[in-house]
Length: 176
Image (cartoon, rainbow, N blue to C red; front, side, top):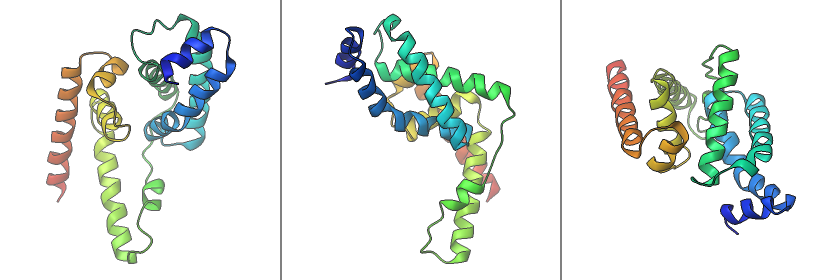
């Protein structure tokens, strides 16, 4: 059963349909939120809030876009509200944990430094470029879905992605 059918089933009284929507989208949604907040507990809390908002708002969902696009729009608004309440933080602790354990200490340190530089460069991008880049690379979303989530057109999302990649190449090239 696809998402659209599950939404219809939920509207017809099937709570199991909503449970299935949560099962399908919980992990990728929480991962996307985690990439923005950099805090696992906050990401889980925001994700729960998003699904509660989706549960209460699903009866008003027009279905002009996909459920996933609608859900991600709710998530981005929830993250935006959350970030307004706290100062953004850049942490390299998680990045260092990503280093390949089979590599030598020096190689792991070099990789951790590079990943930290990339993460910091991504953090310095303008908000819309950063979100477009993350949704395209990490979530594999199409430009039309990114545009629907962030507002704008698919061409605008494509341009944001292009400018983000160009800015990253320039910044990382300057640092070397």
